[in-house]
Length: 112
Image (cartoon, rainbow, N blue to C red):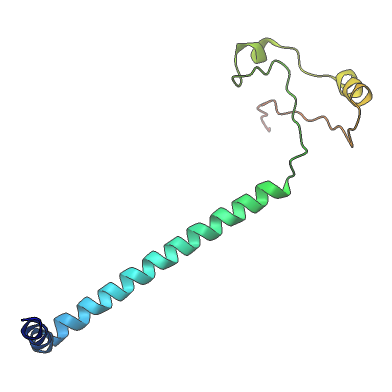
């Protein structure tokens, strides 16, 4: 029974050689495409993870008015940190290797 099935399959493959060849080619191209996409995705994930890890886990960002649930109304109405606040943080908190002030407010400028 199995022998007849195998003989029938081989005979049909030989009879439709072009169709069988194109089918095999399509399967090979499809499998190669899946392997390439998975490899690229893994590589991109590893690169992003490495970039985030290189920033270090010892950074702390402080923003005025920042609550536990993200930005909100308190942040919009709070007074921004000044140079005196930066100096106070640096002076009062032990074990800091450095304190840097930055500004992320958005302003629009027009060139004439």
